[in-house]
Image (cartoon, rainbow, N blue to C red):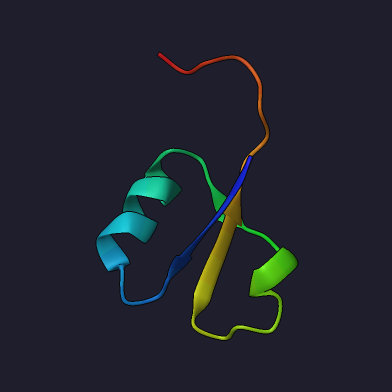
Length: 48
């Protein structure tokens, strides 16, 4: 699963990081946008 958010959203980036998302290469429309944060994590077993 992948998502994109902007750097000013520090709290959002922290929440995604705590949920296991890590930085990934920019994708689609967001390729080349320097203010975005692209995060992803593998889909699998749901965490409890």
